[in-house]
Image 1 (tube, rainbow, N blue to C red):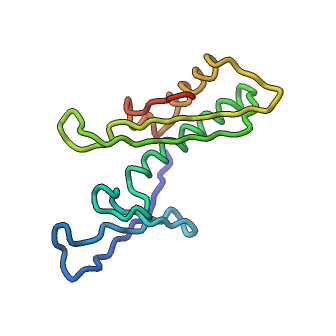
Image 2: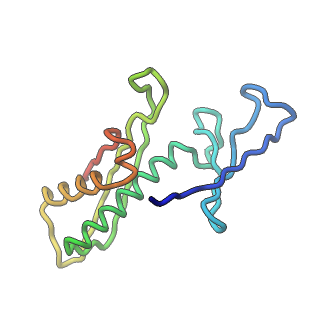
Image 3: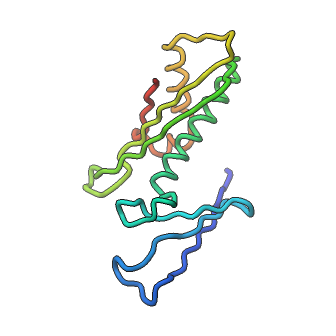
Length: 149
């Protein structure tokens, strides 16, 4: 199987590591050309100018879902012209009472070439197929919801 990796680097900037008195900001490098500053979510003291792991998780689900949808659409001969999504990660407590990303909502909006139409039920079915085959959604199991607009 394929192995995919990132490199993460954090360096303490403060004189000592003390609870509530250090930064969580760190760098994630995806390859030689893609680097991202990641921090805690703003509610947990992170800088809102940086992304956070919860957003990154929502992004991974949304991207995977879109790529799966496009692959299925191409096989079906559907001429997708554009695809947009607003993914939202919801934080809450899981069944064990631990903080977690309890749900990720996707809100995909798909447009097709002008001469193509698809019934809403078939579009919804294709979105659900995309969720079923998305590697990331499969990893997260039942916590991804598709909300078709």
